[in-house]
Image (cartoon, rainbow, N blue to C red; front, side, top):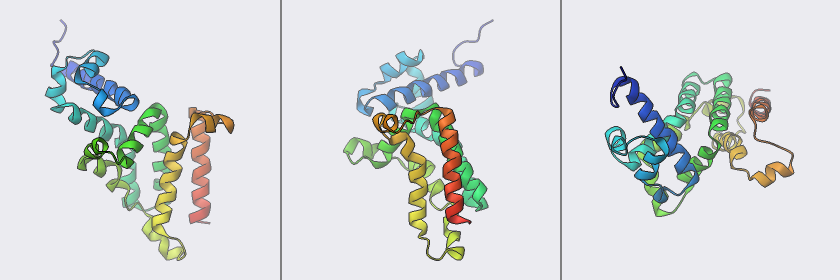
Amino acid sequence: MNNKVGRPSNRIQARESLILAARDLFSRMPYEKVSIRLIADRSGVSSALIKYYFDNKFGLFETMIVETFQPISLKMRTARNKEDFDSLASVLRTFYQTMIQHPDYARLLYRVLTGSDSVTQKLRSEKIIDAVYVSGSSLFFNNINTDRPSMDTDLLRLSFFSLMYFPFLASEGMMTFNNFEMTPEFLQRLAAHNIELLKRSLLD
């Protein structure tokens, strides 16, 4: 006997389908152009379930942003607590692993965090800021001062986040011109390179 929508085996699937559809649509279209009906049509799930699971369109948007970033947030919190280089390197690897699965999401996240228009500013909720910024706000860079007095920890943090985000924000033309292709193999190689770069800068 098949379960009806709303029972446990279907609830998780319906919720996940809505998040997948929302991530695809919000990554490719302006927020105001994405309607509840469009999300429901793309996901194959009743629009009534958006209200049931997320209250409204923004609730779905916020949940999608936070839950997609969650593997990275967890690694950031670990790095902040353990304060060792291996945990920091794990943040970079996890970021690349997450973004290669959702490359358009990286651009969306950047727009949400940096956009100055009124619509984008309203999307920058406290929950999103906490997931993306607060979890990585201190990491372990503050401890570098002891060994490297000349190091500016704020600039170190900026450099680290630049290494994380830039490959996903660079234009396709620039990547092609330099003979780079955004494949899992390329990102694994780039992650290893950037981790070695950080290691030589901070520890050697």
